[in-house]
Length: 279
Image (cartoon, rainbow, N blue to C red; front, side):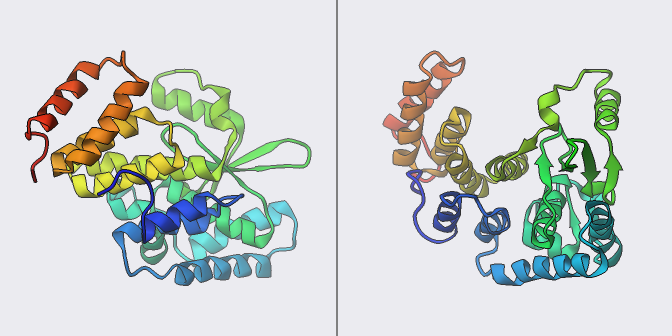
């Protein structure tokens, strides 16, 4: 446990991929999975995405409407990928290799499949950070937007239908138009990691949570909450020096934070040798 940045293995690979421009979403998503699956062979899954794209191209002329229809047919009807509402919080839904193997996923990982198959087929889609339910969209040459819901079989939606769904789910709360904009690969990876962060936090799995926080801080180095949480997790795991480094950095950058007193108390405990289970 270093908390200092990428070292070797899966974390270093993830850092190298993030340094590329553009960030290769497919490879970076698989690099997230490599922490959980050390023997993972990315080329197997990249080839599977290649094959899906070849099938899309083989059954559709290069017109957007036909390709969108072929994409939905190939991914859902032929290959059988679908949403997993029965066990939404299963962490396997958040790892691209498992999604392709089990053909089950959550909105964001199924959206990654859509984005990468479409890219290979020559169709540009964008990820959409819709609140609580990730989507993808195609922007027509006219500027009109068509949204797709990979979790529900690639259902087509207009912007108005997206807004209506949000209002129905939130009791009439208006939707900020920014949530219908396209997002970057880094933002998609950050949201994938955010899902895993919640899962491992709820399961109190500090070892896995620490690895996720490492990656979140590579995607978004200025995310102070993740810096604080990595320090707290390090303290629980007995990584005194890593905990002190992160928590002191957090307090330097947010000295007036509402939890500053509690964080200082943890630091005092570390100084007294009471900061971690493994000390």
